[in-house]
Image (cartoon, rainbow, N blue to C red; front, side, top):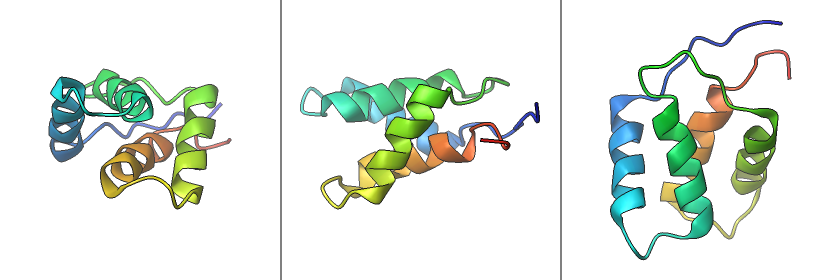
Length: 82
């Protein structure tokens, strides 16, 4: 299995932190933010389930830029072979 060595950027990590502290953030934003933060300074890859959820977010028009930024970061850190 091919390993993806990408990590969450400092910019996305900051955004994820802000999302988690904001009481008005949606559940999906918090889920994506938590996953993104877990991959900051780590060799962890996005799991299959989270990758699918992030992919759905990117394909939908109902999510805002913040949500899509977090989703894009997670998709970019997924297993290269999936």
